[in-house]
Image (cartoon, rainbow, N blue to C red; front, side, top):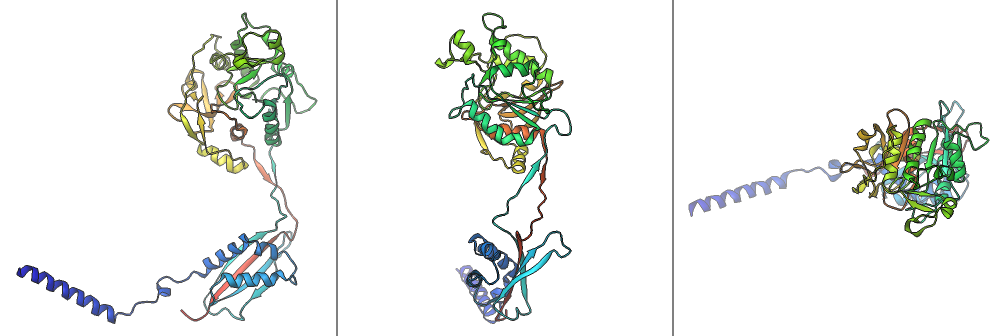
Length: 435
């Protein structure tokens, strides 16, 4: 009992001492503990005025325009009532010894006091657009030709919502600025010509060696009649994929094998299969199934291995995959923004790098569970191919991203010398009423 009383007395004494000390203690004002940052307030005020377009609209108008009065009203309403300010606008001058020239100034006081804070803010006119000139692939070396398979006599598969021709058109618009010449391969006959090292245009820059070839038919690959008729009976279409792999190796092509799905799973040629029907894949005239043997045979040809038909399914389904850090950097550099994550159900196994003497030049997606959903592979001797093992529908931005990341053409900023398109705004703040 006595111990309990002693504890209560101690608590009373400590509490009383704390109350007495707090009564006589002089605490600092909240402003001294956490003073207002005038620089931060000035910056956020300018940003808010710019978001509402009061700032960017007004400062490019003549100083006699009534909108300057509206800007001053908006500025006063954005600041605490005890705040004085001076807002000064300067013209940004190019090609002159003087970088900034005074344009206008508005203020609500003759003096800002002793303690002030200021910030600067650069505003561009609404009619200013950023422009750049891309370096042409092949400009300082070999290559520089982009072939896009736009075969009118071929069909696509697993490119849900698109046609191969529409994908070809979109790829042309996206990638042609980066190549010395971009050529649409309009039919399987022209495809046979480039396979046989015969040019198909009048462009002086067309060069079959070291070219980039993009297949837009999804899981299918157009097959020229000239090649189909020479295949071993009974029409071993996997042998064409083997020959295609050899051509990629011979010409040192960069071959984008597919935009989605399982690469080289079908062959397509509407004219050939109208007279050699066989069994149409999924009931679609002009489309015949090769199965997994198409990709396996292509890799054999690319690695200069003997042709051995192999119908073993090698792709996997890692599910959700995410862009690699390198791909994200490339997105920001070239301004191409596909979805950060995708679903992969036809991803190539990492083991193909050792089986076919390949090196991963750049990952489009991070590897997952021993599978690679998207990457550019370089064969040790010659030839490059890009594969995307994603679930439909196709996103051509990923194909463009992989190729640009591989070649890395530089972007050159265009010289811009026009005056009156940028303004420097300086906002100075002072506080009335002391601390």
